[in-house]
Length: 523
Image (cartoon, rainbow, N blue to C red; front, side, top):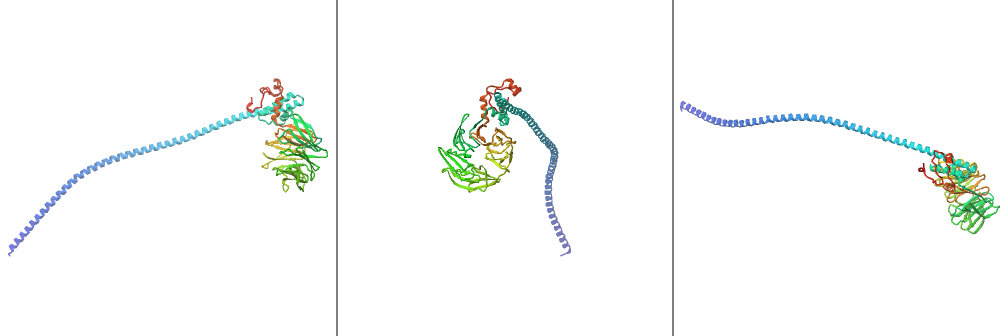
């Protein structure tokens, strides 16, 4: 091959290759152009979308801006509203606080008003009470004064005016809840109602008197002159029937069986008189100077008490069943806890449960006890002494010393809040035990020793025996006294008498038609 052919061939090949390559490149360019066009179209579409999105985004930004603006405005407004709300809440708190303070002030004002009202009521009540107290004291003083005037009139022999005065004394005292047992008032009532009667029956000192069962009008009395008398009251009369009369005997006590009325009387010279219906028995006793009969603690036997020994008597057979000698002297016998009680000469007291069971204790007072009484309602113990003193004990251990008698106390009796006492000084005193200041009210006074007293079942009358052998009946019921006086009033006060004794400032009233009233009956 020649060189020219080769060159031409090579050039043809190169041209062909170049053409082919160019065709390939053109085709590739066309494809690329198409791709670019496609990309351009895509870009154009994306650009439009981007514009739309940009526009939308811008609009959204504007909307967001507007919303933020609105939100800021709302936030500002919310802040302002919060501030307003806080201010309102603060004002509300202040107003609530002010309301609480106002309420507290109102309550305090109401409290002060109530306190002022209560104080005013208390002052009014105190004024009324002071007025009532003054009026009460005035009338009570009037009652006591009228009682003293009544006693003066009785001593002068002016019974009629004395009766009017004694009734007026009672009326004004009772109407104003005063003490009708005040000495001048009680004594005026007693004298006006003729509340004391006396009969001389025995020849020597009366040591005991006891009522028959279920009777306030029949009683048995015994004396140191050896007398046992059966007495029966009929109005102002006393019918006396001797059951035994022998001056060689010295009777110191009588005991009557409540169930059958059997009478037991004991004499210092070892003699026991027994009367059961119509049957009479006399029993000699193995005792040293016997002086007292007591019901045994078992309620079935009688305890016969001597100075140095005791004997137990069977009530059914009336025989001595047991004797006990004592190593001390018995100076007084009474009862405690439903059992016989003995006081000895050594300052001791002995409760006899049985002859085999005697409880000994020390007497709580110093001196010789001459009378004793115990009561369960109220719980009191009274010790009467040889020097006239009375010691009163309660269940709390409190002791009160009663001064009123001038000599030996012979007997004490307790009835509720009333203590009765008798003495050798010739008086019977009444003590009201539930009062702060215990002062004696003399129910009876004589020149004779009072050895013994007793009251009837109704406790309206006291019966007493004295050293001269007298038997006396004393009315102690104020209502009965007042009723007696009202029945015997023959007239009323004249106007002049009223003004003189009662006073012009007190409204006049008729006592003959008057009835005791409470304080509401004041005029």
